[in-house]
Image (tube, rainbow over the protein chains, first blue to last red):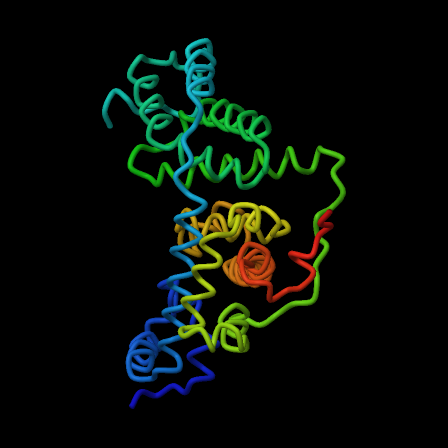
Length: 78
Length: 214
């Protein structure tokens, strides 16, 4: 079993899922999340939620008019 | 070493067509994602377009100091965020920082687990996610107050690292983390409200469907 308990894992879960957890503890977190159903369910939910928010809030396209305005603006600049 | 090196004492070297071409390539590559972020930040198409024009104007002016090979996306986002914060400060808008009581990190997960209705129906987390799928997630995100919304947009939508966000916003990494986590907690609470409103097809909430019938 890994050297971290559920409290520590949940406290650092966002940092871990962001790929920002400290190297010294990263492996322990990974092992724990794999082995512990309770923490894995938390992690899975957060990952799915993040993907859902991305799918709903990304993918905007700049309007053609803005593109044209920008091109005109930039070509007029010294 | 090469002929292209611009010495700082001579900043007014004429702009070459190569410079323009390189800059245009940057615009084309990053415009959509910058525009998307501008929209989520300003919550308004006209304001977003103004912000984008301002951003690229400023970017062009300091393009000479930008070194090819460094992170162009982070550089453009730094200019965008500075322009956004400037325009935000200038406007007489009331400060958004109305912070409600804070909730825990896993608010939505906890809410799904607590819900008898979801538990009876099977997999509570999946049911909640499908309700959020039907909700207006963009509006929920746009309701997250600043400065927390910017941190969520940069991390969760644009997937910048904590270090990059610290550079873009000129704040310490610890502040990035506290804004981001606070922003996520806000967002989860808002998503819960939006999901509840979006999800009612059965009459579980009696007042939701009992509007005036003739």
